[in-house]
Image 1 (spheres, rainbow, N blue to C red):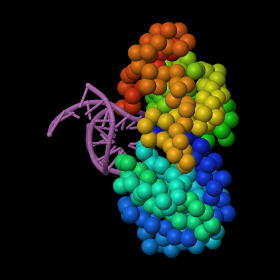
Image 2 (spheres, chains in turn red, blue, cyan):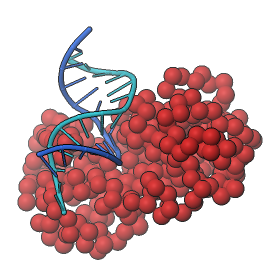
Image 3 (tube, chains in turn blue, orange, brown):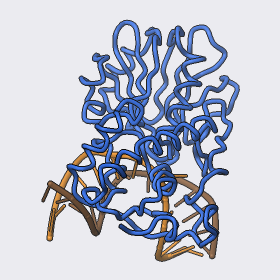
Length: 274
DNA sequence: GGCCGTGTTGTTAA
DNA sequence: TTTAACAACACGGC
C-alpha cells in the first residue's frame, strides 16, 4: 500500500543507512522483478556507490556513482528492508544487495510481486521511463496550479486524485482521508468545484500527508519501515477502513462505496454531494 | 475447498 | 475524453 507517506518514510530511513555505501554484490532470486536487462543491471549495480536516494511520487530513485540510477516501485506489497545476513531469507524476498561496509543487507521483498526495479544509465527523472510521466508532487505544486489542473479535468474528483499523471503520490487511503478533512464528496465532479474549494483542498492534502509522514505511514498489513517496524497512522484514520463506525466529527456511520473501481470511504453528513 | 476482496497501475476495450 | 474491466499475484477472511 505504499503511498507518498510510506515511500517518504522508507526513503528517509534508507538515506541514513545507505548513502556513501558501496554495493559489493547483488543477488537476484526472482528475475521478473527486474525490468531492465538483467546482466546489464547486475553489472551496473555491482561496485557502484550509492550517492543519493530520492522519492518521486510513489517511486524511489537510488542514484549511483559511476552515474546511473535504480528506480524502485513497491506497488501494493513491496518492501525494502535492512537486515543482517543472519536474518533468514523467506520465499518472498526477491533481491539482496550486499554492501561493502555494512552489517546490513538491503533486501527487496514483495508478496504479490507487482513491484519492480528499473536500472538506467540516466539520472534525471525526466529521462527515466517510469518517472517522466508523473504529475507534480503535492509538496511542489502551488495551490493555484493545483486548482487550475483540477478545473481542466472532467469526471469524479477521487479518480483524478489517484491519477499519478495529474498529481503524484496519493493513493486510496490518503485520498479518502483528505476528502474527508476537506468535507468534499468523492464523487464530486472536478469541474464543478469552485476555484476556492479546489484551492482549499490543496493545503488539506498536504496536511494529511505531513501528519502521516510524522506517524511513519499507515500499516494495514504489509507496509514496514526498513527496520521492520510498522507505521502508526492507521490509528488516526478518520474514514479509511472504518465502514459502519461513527464519524469522529459528527457521529454518523461511515459509508463505503465504489468509485472508479476502488473502495471509497466517506461520511455522508460531513461530505455531502455537491 | 471456494469465493471475495485487497493498498497499484498498465493495457485493452467500449 | 473518459470509463470500465482485467491482468499481474498471493493471501486472509468467511
